[in-house]
Image 1 (cartoon, helix red, strand yellow):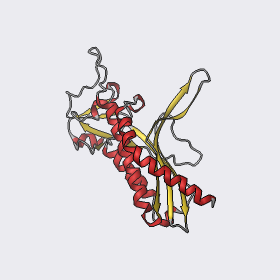
Image 2 (cartoon, one colour):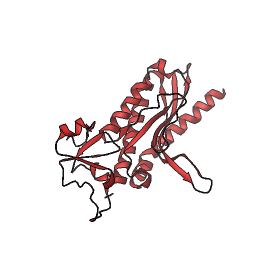
Image 3 (cartoon, rainbow, N blue to C red):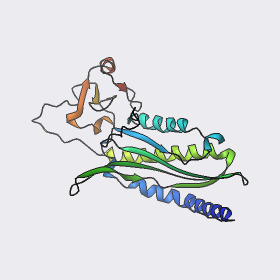
Image 4 (cartoon, rainbow, N blue to C red):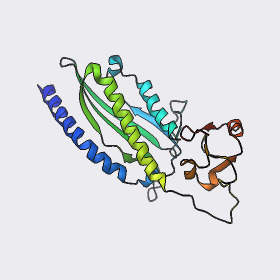
Length: 242
C-alpha cells in the first residue's frame, strides 16, 4: 500500500514537472551564470541509483558516451577518471554530474525516475582555508513514470535534453566574453595564425570559432596549419571543423 501511495505521489510530481519544465527551462537559459565562463574541460560523473536498470536495457557506459559526444562537439574536453582508485579528481577541474534515482515497480511494470544534471566547480573558503567542489549550476530536474520496456529511451532522451540545456547556458555565458587586450604584451593574437588552441586543452580551432574567442590570451597557442597542430597533440574542434 505504501509503495502504491509513493508511486502516486511521484506520478503526480512527474505530471507537474512536465508542465513546468518548459517555462522554468526558458527562464534558466536566459540567466547568465558566471560559473560557466571560461570552462574548457570537465569530468563527467554519473551517479546511477543502485538498481537493476542495466538488466532492463539501460547501458550506463552508452549513456556516458552520449553526454561526452555532446560536450566534445561543443569544444569541451573530457578529462578521464583517475587511474588509481584512491586518487581523487583534480579540484581545479569542474565536474558535470548526472544524479539519478530510480524506483522499479515489478508488478505494475513501471519505473519512476528522477534525473538532474549539475555542474560542480571549486569553491574556496578563505576564513577556513579550505576548498571543495560545490554545485554552481543545476538543470531543472526531470521526474517521470514510464513503462519498464520504455525506460531506456526515456532516460536517454532526458539526459541528452539536460546536456543540451547545459551547453546552451554555457554558450550564452561565454557568448559576449572577450579576453582583455593589453597592447604592451607579446601574447599570441588570433590574427597571426590560421588556427588557435589553449595550452590547457587538446582541441584547436579556427581563429573565428566562437569557442576560440573564450581562450585567455596567456593560454593561447597559434598554428599556421592543421598538421602542425595535430603534431602538437591537438585534435580539431568539431564545431568549426578546422
